[in-house]
Image (cartoon, rainbow, N blue to C red; front, side, top):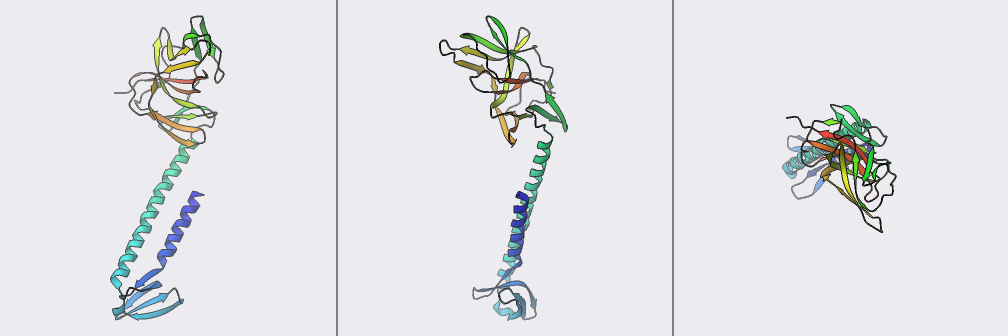
Length: 257
């Protein structure tokens, strides 16, 4: 639809530009399709009367006519250039989106090759042990302190760029971002949790990385850190605040020097 509108817009500009204002020195003008200077007269095709006519050259403001015609042609050329660039960007965006699977998950494009990240198994660690956190299914835990963890202490997904770009395809509208993880006793802590007594409200304390995000399609986003990541353990995370329904796709950042 956008391409059709752009084409119609350019067509309308071209149609308008095809009609030239042949200015007269008294300030009036004739709307003409074309004109030519022949000795001391100007021969032109009148749009109003659909016929060829002539007028003495001394009555025509030829400089003003030519200047406006040049400016209008330049404006049309510039608009066409802008639309061409926008069309190129749109085509590239469509090609980029087409490379990402529609299945919910996290992906990377490295040298135009698709890398698929697998969902890590998250566990809630309380003083009574660990419980597996089922994706998008909150579990009840007693009041007190806890941590959300994944195993092992280091990710097997190595990212060598300090500013990695990820694609996240959401299954439903959720929050998402990049968290820094803390290795600890054979696991990585995704976030610390505090469960408020009586209300059982959950206070989450993740170490979030500031990111840029760009929506590419419905449910599909491209994200990357605002600042280069120091070497360490990280994860792309999808979650609902305060619901313990976190999904974690882990990676280790080891920037190449």
